[in-house]
Length: 179
Image 1: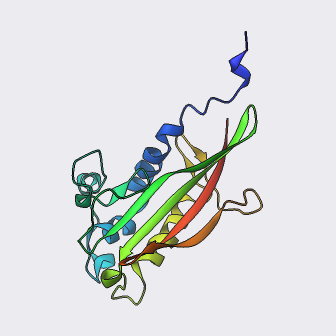
Image 2 (image 1 turned 90 degrees about the vertical axis):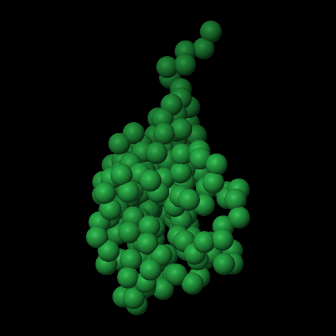
């Protein structure tokens, strides 16, 4: 019989997306405004309430296009609105040895071409990307541990251009070590 106590079980893996979104709800206001409001001055709107932020998070409803924040990849419904969406989910898991591993999380931001430019001469995608790096890099996320954006620690960590017309976007890959 094998002693499983010496092996990593990654029991919290299924909570990683939720834990990141919960952390983001408390640690950043600008991202939520840019997700909710498709206007050029979205950055200048009043902060959202907890209930308004919660209403943007997809929870298994039939029509995904009513939501802006998702815990997985892919888009099953045709998107006809000029919106911005954020997807946060585990991208990969590498078992370094039997007790220790590295999880790479992906943060995908997509914005419709027509609403990407803001009135402050910045783009929605780049602003959200920068804010995600600021919020998560080096932060200890409850249930996950400390996320990092560090190519010396993980070659997976990078920023990539993503999207498909009419949505442009960027993907951030950040990692953490876990048992």
